[in-house]
Length: 223
Image 1 (cartoon, rainbow, N blue to C red):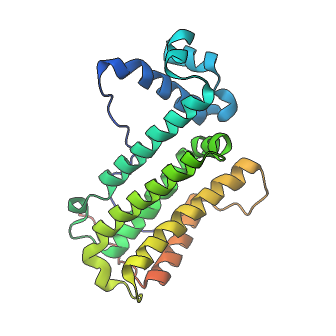
Image 2 (cartoon, rainbow, N blue to C red):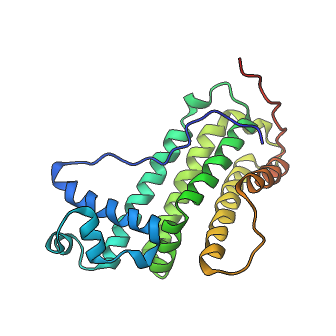
C-alpha cells in the first residue's frame, strides 16, 4: 500500500487546572492498566498505586470503579475528536488527492483501533449496557463524520455516487464498524480468519475506492 506522510497520533488533551491533576493521574493510571491487562487489571488498589495517590482521593472523585470507567470513556471520546481534528485539519491536506486522504484515514483508524483495542474492548464489556455509553459513541460518530465531510467537501464532485455526502457518511460507518467487530471477535475469543494490518488496510481501501468511485493515486516520487 502507498504510504502517505501524515501525523498519525492519538491526541492526549492537556491537563486543565491544577486541581485536576489528581483526577488526571487516576484516569491515566486506569488507562495504562487497561492497555496492559484489560478490564481485570483495573482495580482500585492498582489504580491508586499506579497514580501515586490514595484510596481516599479515589473515592473523593469516584463512587466506584464503574464511575471511573465512565469518566475515562468520556475523556477518550474527547481525545478521539481531538485526534480527528488534528488528522483531518483541511490545511494539512491541501494539494492532496482524495485517494491519499482515504489512505491516511484507513491507516489512522487501523492504528488507533489496534493500539487501543484492549481499552475499547474493556469499555464495551463494562459499559455496553449503559445507554449513555451508546449515546457518547453516537455523538462521536457524528462528530467524526462531520469532520470528514468538511475535509472532503472540495472532493465531493469526484465521488461517483448519486449522493456523495451520504456515501462518505456510510464509508465512515463501514470503516469503524469493521474495526469494532474485529476488536469484539478478538476479545471474545471467537475463531476468525486472521488478517494482518497491511492486508486489512489494502482490502478496506479496495472496498472504499469501489464504493466511492475513487481512482487509486499514483505513488509520488520522493526527492
